[in-house]
Image (tube, rainbow, N blue to C red; front, side, top):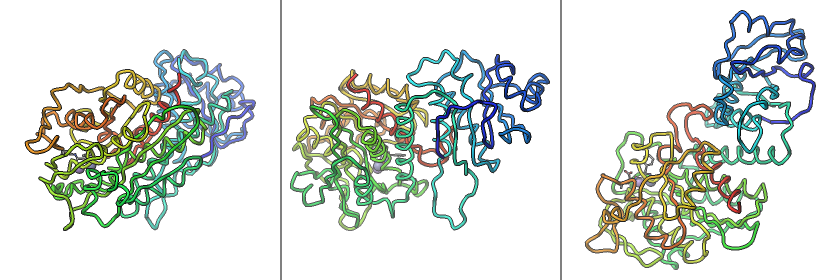
Length: 487
Ligand code: BES
Ligand code: MN
Ligand code: ZN
């Protein structure tokens, strides 16, 4: 779907459907010109009480005598309760309804939305369009019979949004879509080398991939051990974007392209979903693509330690001890706590070679995260409060919500090993925080924050603007974080 910002006389717009938002106190008189053209159809349904403008309430009216063949009355609820998130949800609800109507063009009258006390960076139409676009996502899939609904080609918005806002809107939505596509693609196709190819498809960045030999030379054995049991060769992907001066912000994305658990094999139920264990890497790729498209004036380096976790005769085993890039020895208690092993070397690589200004890792790291926070927020922990404040701010803006969990020193005791410097897993209690305590060992004194997106990167049910499957969690958030870093 193509979004265009247009200048036009509302009552004369040529389109299939004109979208007209109503707050609970909006009078039909606010749309008198349009109402006139429809032969007072709008004012009569409002006056008769057949349309009540509660949030996301929708009514479709046919208006064959107008330059638009339908109007969609869209309830927005109370004006004082308006938020950017309500706008996203309303945008998605309206467009999803129109998708079912075999329509190819729609136009939004945004004037009433613009007259609200919304305290946001962008005008209301921005968030409406963002929801509309995100909600129209569909994974093209592998079926012979293609789904033929959702074929709206364009959404015209009568508004005064500026070029920069439109560019940012398109880039950030594309970032989420890119991430969703990568995550929805099954593991037999989305292999570590396919992730490297996805990285190389991004324009305006430098991509370097280390193979097994090169990773071994750097002693990244924690990462390499995870891939030992798979025929897919690991790819340690480093993406460099240079748009400014000084040290880079480093984004690390967990990129386990399939997590069977390895020798500590996962149960059968739901194992097919473990294709989404590279969702952190996908979010980072989405953000990098947008950062480069928008030519942001910062330096960002992304690291994706891509690998597949399978159990064959060469697989690593519980009890093995491996040495990471920083020299720490790690006792592997569970081969299913593999994500942190890959991140240990990725974070260690950043510390050793990149003098990072900040490190943010994003990972589907623990089932415990999904238990604690459900699908509503990512867990955040880290060593740097200023960095976490920035993340919190970005997440409030994009509504990819985060919730801080504690990282008390005592959690590190959960991972004391009898024979190595650290073990990769303790008991079940506190395992969300223990996983972050593990990563902290490798970040050293660099400002670092960790986002666990195990509960939010995938959804088993349709959400307000994301269908079942990959949500794209984190892509817009990371883009916003990077964009605002110099502020
Ligand atoms: N990829 C999983 C975490 C996960 C679970 C993500 C469910 C999404 C949904 C991770 O590699 C894992 O297996 N974690 C273990 C750690 C444990 C062995 C310490 C877990 O959370 O059970
Ligand atoms: Mn695992
Ligand atoms: Zn995993």
